[in-house]
Image (cartoon, rainbow, N blue to C red):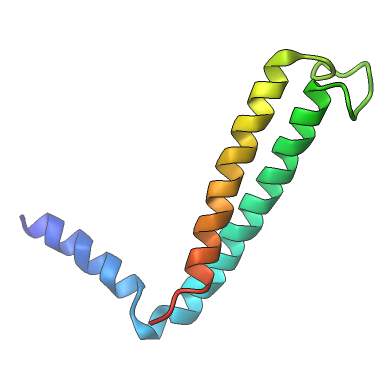
Length: 91
C-alpha cells in the first residue's frame, strides 16, 4: 500500500506549482514529437497510396503502408494532443 502512495505522491509532485514550467516544457516537447510522428504517418500513408515518393520505394503502392501510415498518424495525433494538454495545463 505504501508503494502505491509513494507513486501517487510523485505524480502529484510533478503537477505542483513549482514544476509548472517543467510540465509546460515537457508538454511542448511531447507535442512536437507527436506532430512529427503525424507528419511521417501522413507521408507513409500517401506513399502507400502512390501519391508521393519515388516509385522505387518499398512503400510505394503498398497497401500495408496505407494501414501503417494511418496507425502512425493516429498515434502521433494522440501524442500531440497529450502534449498540448500538458502545455496548457493550469495549476
